[in-house]
Each structure stands twice: as C-alpha cells, then as structure tokens.
Image 1 (cartoon, one colour):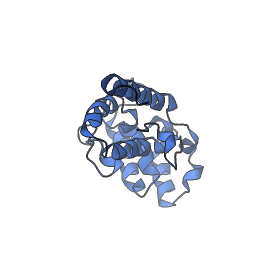
Image 2 (cartoon, one colour):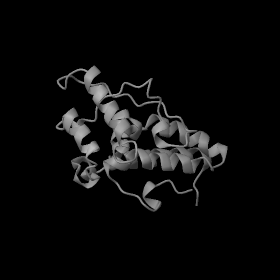
Image 3 (cartoon, helix red, strand yellow):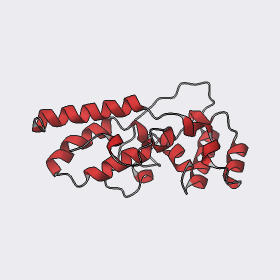
Image 4 (cartoon, one colour):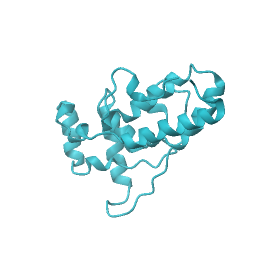
Length: 170
C-alpha cells in the first residue's frame, strides 16, 4: 500500500496542485479494502488542509473552471471582512465519494475566504487575466511550493494509524 503522493506520475509539489493531489490519493484509496479505508479516512478528514476553500480556488484557477473560481474569489472579497483581521481556519468536512476534487467540500457550508496569495491582485485585474487568457506560468502563486510538511505529516499519521491497526506491512 503506497501512501506517498510523490509515487504517482505527474506529481508537482506546487500550491496549485495540492487539492488535486489529495483528490488523487482519495480516489485511489476507494479501491482499498474497507478495513483500510476505515483507518485512512478519519486521518485524512482531520488533516485535509488542501481542501480549504482558498486552496481549492487556487487549483480551480488553473483549470477549465477559472471563471467560477474568479467569481467565488470576488464574492468572498465582497462579503468578507477587510484584510486587517484574524481569520479562523477550519478544516472542511471531506466528501470521499466525489468524482472531482472541487466537490470534496460543501461550498455552501464553508466560510469561503479569498486566497491570501492573490491579495495583491485586484478583482478587476483577476477578471482581466482570465478574460485575456493569461498563461498560468505568469501567475506568481504557481511557483509557490505546496505545504509539503503538511503532506508529510498526513503520510506519517496515516502510516502510523495503519501500523497500529494492521501491523507492519513488511
């Protein structure tokens, strides 16, 4: 049972791919025996940092849903408090039975806050970049690494939980 996301081809440890990597891991785990899923799913649920709405919006900006993401970012900026307050980070509940990474969270139940890495881009600039079909390589957040420590922590927790429950694999 291989748990590390770097072991699948196409692994890119940048911020835009975090939600997709978690979705890939979850969708792969669907084929594991139920006794393993019962161990893994609670660990993923309590450590699903990539499923935060802000991270999901960044991933959506880099695929065919960029218009939806831009609309949600602008709406969150309009209804949310100004940038001078402390935001409470809540890990959203994860739906393990989805067929797409954007459906892992219930968007209506989440407090959607705009991604902080885009705070220097105005709503007008964001819409213009999407309308002009600006290549993603020129977006600064593409270069940021994903929270690899968080990924390693999840892998460690999942591995420890399975060893306690199932025993060593080798």
